Length: 457
Image (cartoon, rainbow, N blue to C red; front, top):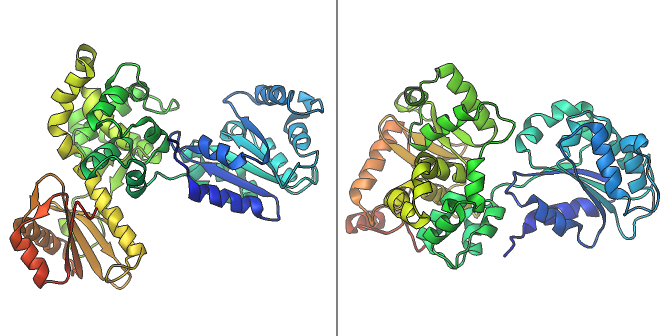
C-alpha cells in the first residue's frame, strides 16, 4: 500500500494554482517518497520530467536533449544548451492550466554552474515564452539544499517561490498506516524504519516484527540488507572512520571521551567526523534544556538519530560474520531478541514527546509550551522538559520496559527535577503497562500529575 503525502500534495497544488509562474524547490532524503509525490502531483497535468545525472554539463545537455526527441515535435540543437531546452519546453501553449517542468536531482546541474538556474528564472519571467509555467526543482540531497544551495545560487536564490521539505512522518501516521500492530510492535518497527514512507511500503504488518526483520534486514540480498552494507553517502571520504564512530555510538559510547577511548582516534578527528555526520542528519548532539541547574548537566552527548542506521550498527554491523553463518531467524533469536525491548526505549520516549506535542497543539495542556527538549544530568535524566516564555514548565517520565511504573520512579523524577532546579507546573507519567496503586493514589490527590498508559497511546 503506497503512502500518500496529502498535506505536501496540497501545498504543491496551492503553488500551482497561483496566477504567477512559480519556481518551487522540493526536497527530502532518498526514503522520503519524493518520487511518488512527484508522480501524484503531475498526474493529469501538462508536464515534462527530467532526472539529472551526476555528469559533465555537456553530457547533461545531451542526455536531456535525447530524452526529449520523442516528446517534442520541434528538433532541438544541443548547442543551444539549457536555454534551447527550456525555451522549447515552454514554447508552445499548455494543453490545460500551467505546464509543470520537473527537474529531479537538479543539484547535479547546479553544481556545474548557474547557467541552468539563470535560464529557469528567465523562463519564469516569461522571457522565453508566454506559457504559464511552474518549475519544480527536486533533490534528495537535504544537506546541499539547506547548507550550500543559497551560497551557490547567490541572488538567484531570491527567485525561488518556496521550499518544501519532506520531513519524516510521525508515529501517529505510522499507527494509522500499520493498523494490524499494537503499541509494542509499532514502537519496535518505528525504531527501525522511522518515518520514511519508502521503508513503510517494504514493511508488512500482516507479518510479525521478527519476520519483517529477518526477511528485509537480515536476509542476504534483501533490500535493507544491501542498504545497510552501503549505508554512508558515496561522497564521504574514509568510510572506515565513520563506520567506527557509528559503531561506538551504537554501543552507547555517546561522549567524545568515550568515543576516543573506544576508537583510538584523536579527539580533534572525532569532532570533525561527527560534525559531518550531524550535517548529514545521521547523528545529533543532545543539548539539555537550559535550566538553573546547569552545573548538574552532562554535556557533549551524541546519538545516532537515523533509526535504521542506529539499528544496523547496534545489531548487524558488529555481528556480521555471525549472520553469514546463521539463518536470519537464528541470528534474530540470539543477537537481537534479548535486548530489543531495551533498545526500543528511546523510541518510546520520542513517541511520548509526540503525544505531548499533539496535546500542546490542541491546547489540551494547562499552558502552551514553545520549547521542548530533554534534560541529561550527571545523575539521572528527565525524558521531556517543556516550557513557555513565562517559565511555566512541564516534565515527563517514560516507562517502557517494566510492566508497572511505581511510586519510586516518580520519586526519582522529582530528584532529577531538583537537580535541574525546575519549578514544575505539570507532570506527565507515561507507562506502556500500568501504574502501581500508590502512584495512582498520588495522581488522584495531585491534579498536576497525569498518568498515560499504553492504551491511551
